Image 1 (tube, rainbow, N blue to C red):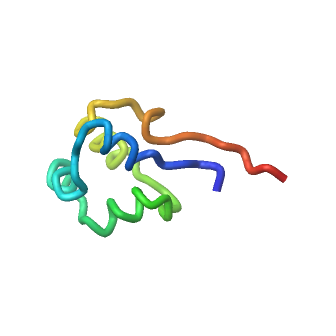
Image 2 (tube, one colour):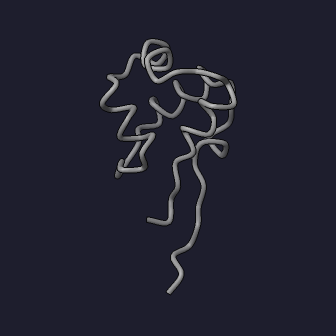
Image 3 (cartoon, rainbow, N blue to C red):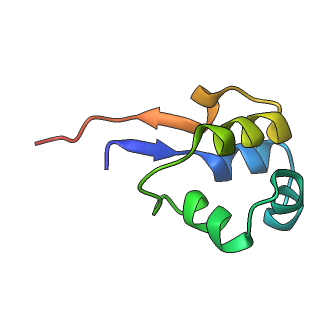
Amino acid sequence: MPIIVNLDVMMAKRKMSLNELSEKVDLTLSNLSILKTGKAKAIRFSTLEALCKALDCQPADLLEYRPDRE
Protein backbone atom coordinates (compact mmCIF):
# COMPACT_ATOMS: atom_id res chain seq x y z
CA MET A 1 0.00 0.00 0.00
CA PRO A 2 1.45 3.38 -0.95
CA ILE A 3 0.34 5.10 2.30
CA ILE A 4 2.76 4.42 5.14
CA VAL A 5 1.75 5.02 8.77
CA ASN A 6 4.74 6.19 10.83
CA LEU A 7 3.03 5.93 14.21
CA ASP A 8 5.79 3.76 15.63
CA VAL A 9 8.42 6.34 14.61
CA MET A 10 6.57 9.21 16.31
CA MET A 11 5.94 7.12 19.42
CA ALA A 12 9.65 6.32 19.64
CA LYS A 13 10.59 10.00 19.18
CA ARG A 14 8.21 10.93 22.01
CA LYS A 15 9.26 7.92 24.13
CA MET A 16 5.60 6.96 24.46
CA SER A 17 4.30 3.44 24.92
CA LEU A 18 1.26 2.00 23.16
CA ASN A 19 -0.53 1.82 26.52
CA GLU A 20 0.15 5.48 27.28
CA LEU A 21 -0.96 6.59 23.81
CA SER A 22 -4.07 4.43 24.06
CA GLU A 23 -5.11 6.24 27.24
CA LYS A 24 -4.39 9.68 25.78
CA VAL A 25 -6.36 9.17 22.55
CA ASP A 26 -9.05 6.90 24.00
CA LEU A 27 -8.52 4.09 21.50
CA THR A 28 -8.20 0.39 22.21
CA LEU A 29 -4.78 -1.20 22.13
CA SER A 30 -5.89 -3.43 19.26
CA ASN A 31 -6.98 -0.48 17.11
CA LEU A 32 -3.73 1.37 17.80
CA SER A 33 -1.77 -1.77 17.05
CA ILE A 34 -3.50 -2.08 13.67
CA LEU A 35 -2.47 1.49 12.88
CA LYS A 36 1.05 1.00 14.18
CA THR A 37 1.67 -2.12 12.11
CA GLY A 38 0.33 -0.54 8.92
CA LYS A 39 -2.60 -2.93 8.59
CA ALA A 40 -5.26 -0.19 8.77
CA LYS A 41 -7.25 0.50 5.61
CA ALA A 42 -8.61 3.86 6.82
CA ILE A 43 -8.32 6.41 9.60
CA ARG A 44 -10.90 8.88 10.85
CA PHE A 45 -9.97 12.54 10.95
CA SER A 46 -10.98 12.62 14.62
CA THR A 47 -8.51 9.80 15.33
CA LEU A 48 -5.79 11.54 13.34
CA GLU A 49 -6.48 14.75 15.25
CA ALA A 50 -6.27 12.94 18.61
CA LEU A 51 -2.99 11.28 17.62
CA CYS A 52 -1.48 14.58 16.47
CA LYS A 53 -2.54 16.25 19.71
CA ALA A 54 -1.18 13.46 21.92
CA LEU A 55 2.10 13.20 20.00
CA ASP A 56 2.45 16.96 19.37
CA CYS A 57 2.94 16.47 15.64
CA GLN A 58 1.41 17.16 12.25
CA PRO A 59 -0.54 14.64 10.09
CA ALA A 60 2.41 14.53 7.68
CA ASP A 61 4.57 13.24 10.55
CA LEU A 62 2.27 10.22 10.82
CA LEU A 63 1.30 9.58 7.20
CA GLU A 64 3.63 9.23 4.23
CA TYR A 65 2.93 8.56 0.57
CA ARG A 66 5.25 6.18 -1.30
CA PRO A 67 4.12 5.27 -4.80
CA ASP A 68 4.12 1.60 -5.69
CA ARG A 69 7.00 0.64 -7.92
CA GLU A 70 5.79 -1.30 -10.91
